[in-house]
Length: 126
View 1: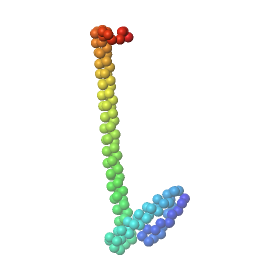
View 2 (view 1 turned 120 degrees about the horizontal axis):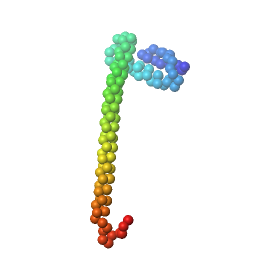
View 3 (view 1 turned 60 degrees about the horizontal axis):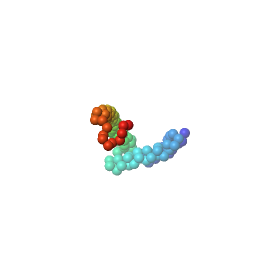
View 4 (view 1 turned 180 degrees about the vertical axis):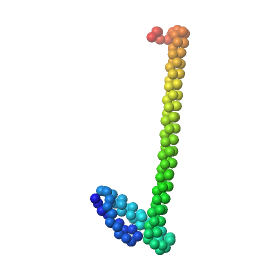
């Protein structure tokens, strides 16, 4: 299993990760380290453990908000899909009604044409 060495808040940690996940883990650690550095600038020296907890809670809050937004988008997507399917069903029904109307109209025109008989000077019987 690959191992990565990361530095967070000036401390070095050796971490195991899945094959091919080394760069991802390094980027996560760098992001967390940056978050801690930003908080240290904003709050001063309030203790490493407290900074780490605050940074972790901030990230957890962002993750929870992202999950809420994703769930809302999934609900919206499902509603749009349902609406699209209903529209497709309605369109198919309208097309079927239109086709039936065109067929009945064509049959009626044929009946009228037969009653009227051949047109003088027109083509002879088909």
